[in-house]
Length: 401
Image (cartoon, rainbow, N blue to C red; front, side):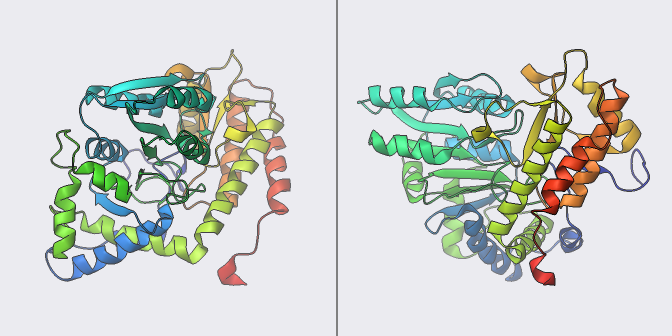
């Protein structure tokens, strides 16, 4: 029995955790197993190989850690850096703020580059800092690929281009929690040294698995990094990788089988098709917002996210009321505005195992909510704009042709 029952399905449109597809739920509906038996290492070996495909890497080493994205952050930092090391980190929203806070609490010397919320990372300032750092005191550049608080996506290829232009050896650490498996992400091509994601985002699994992928350069850095780590220590994983048993401690058996099913669904659809689907969902949502006469929190098209849209409401409306009413009246879950944009925006998550008709149901619910709180929306306007776009852009389902 649900804790708070509502008829039908909950329309889950927060930017994570996301909807879990039925094949994944069924795959996880199983008893525990002995992870030291031959079956679990055999499963793990295939997962580690296939996870590399979603990062688009052939040289990276993945780690499947029983944790959240926050733990994956800590793993990336503590395995590659030492206390006092200088990092450059971009503050563009709530989640980049939290990663900066973690870096500071881990005693790194964090050089914060702050932008207005709704803008992307200021790469001009990065360029000036790299140019001035002839002594190579900057040990890592840390960036959130997709800031879910504001719906901003950063261009990682430009960061790599700057590092190469100034021949700077700093490590390139990327939070891809709400981007990997939904947005274009190319670990090898963009020279990312550590990339990470969480199971509850585009992979469409329950929360509980942090997936970290480390480049050869990052693994080399881990040999001399002096940060204290125990649970997150890559060295322990690598020891068991060599033994062929893979796990230094007990994994979540159910999540491993869920990950197998989730990856199979992604590969069946095709990763490039998954990315294209997210592009359609993002475009349709932005067209609906425009039709409602509202603004996107993201200030430039180049920063638009295809996994989440933060919608700015007029000053006379509290966006928190929209989110509360959506849950109470329509069984619709939307994302709250966080920190600086609390009460000013609500967020529509459109990532994971989600199709266009599901999104249209969400947009219809948002229109009713806007009417409920006194915004003069024309019912059907946003849905019509999204429909017109989607009807011209949805391809046939490959497996049904």
